[in-house]
Amino acid sequence: MLHPIELLAPRRLGTGFRWVLASSWTTNLADGLVLAAGPLLVASRTHDAFLVALAATVQWLPPLVFGLWAGALTDRLDRRRLVITVDVVRALVVGMLATAVVLDAAPIALVLAALFLLGTAETFADNASSTLVPMLVARDDLAAANQRIQAGFLTINQMIAPPIGAAMFAVGQATPFATYGVLVLAGAVLVSRLRLPRTGCSGTSAATSARTSPRACAGPGGTPPCARSC
Image 1 (spheres, rainbow, N blue to C red):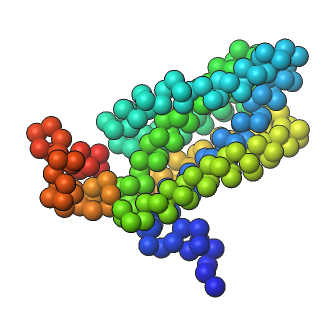
Image 2: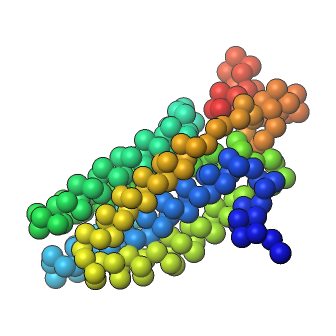
């Protein structure tokens, strides 16, 4: 019988992928909590249906607005460091929001601004995190690795976490936000354990990639972009 860890993240995918997967699932849990708790927090402060709907909208809007920018920035920066930095920023933003909620000093404008910032940070973190996978997993295993990343998003972020977030909000309005902060910090710690290999984007060495497909892997000055990204 397979060990649960071996079933979820087979050893052939590598230890590095396991750190990325654990971080991804942890932060997806956090994002799902706020996905439900954010609109509930606004609804607890107003009966205006437009503002309640806006609370959901500002969480979904950043990927549409900043998706391309996030991709461009990810290509130019250290991806592991970017994920860690953005997760820490998320923890700071939600920490301030949770404090304001506890002190009953969280106006709707502050809540909406915080939700928008969290959604924007999530866009950059998810983009950078997803690009780590091809740097860690062999080409033949990319489908299996990406399936596990996407499964975490669909099941944890979209299905499991929102009801939990709503239940936590019923217990205490600041509870899901404080939990979010803890989870994204845990995600940052998990990614910090990752050590990127000096490899190309598909798990092979940059030199091998350049020999195999020189036109696809040659950048300005003949430098393989895969090597630069690592």
